[in-house]
Image (cartoon, rainbow, N blue to C red; front, side, top):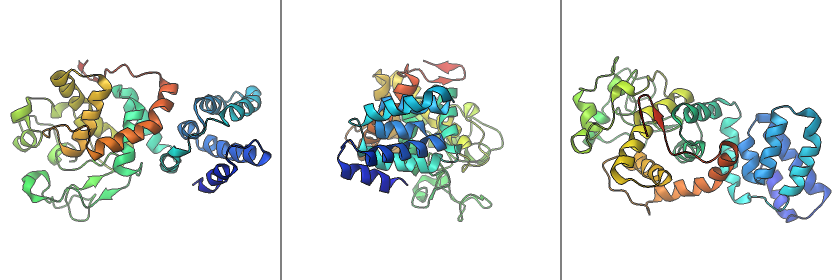
Length: 303
């Protein structure tokens, strides 16, 4: 989206010139225009992030001088390595629906926004309408991925990867509840098998899983990801391994890709991709939100 402007700034090599200043200002205006403070921060660093925040909250009398100061201090602090991540974030948050979903999920369940952004970036590139027909197709899982006539969100009635966090399989999809139950039922055998409760104890309760009517709705998708996996998985891994909370989130990321029953591998490609996203998002969101306290909230179950 901003490739031309960014390339122009790269070519200038950080030289102090009117062309560079104008380019930076154009990008800032584009960011501020869509409300994506995070994207501005990734490119230009925390100082400009604070600038953009002030502009967004409408401190008109201060914004012009603040912008100038932010641009000046950011001139030697650009993070162009994050350009791709910024572009995809900007594109899919321009309508604010994705950003609002991430913000709401983070606030409601006390999950760090950098974690949610990292997962959404890997899974869907922040595209809330993505259906991955290469996932959720294997019959070896039995009812986990079987065709359900009348399921309207995929052309073949299978639970392929869907939406912002790529909910896959009837364990995580299902309308209104997993396995397309109209009411949550913790005794439902297929759910218990699919969530490996025979080997991992009763680590999740369907009664606490959010209702899902439309997996392409980013707000509902985020809620289902948090309640149907991320928070209970975090609580399970925290109890089992007693690691630093941020390391526990890496286990959650790994398990979202491989399953809760797979042995964790910190050198796995998914974990590496997750770590790469953190280099783009973590410092910026901590600048906005402060350091995460490591205590997700989930109804009456919390650390």
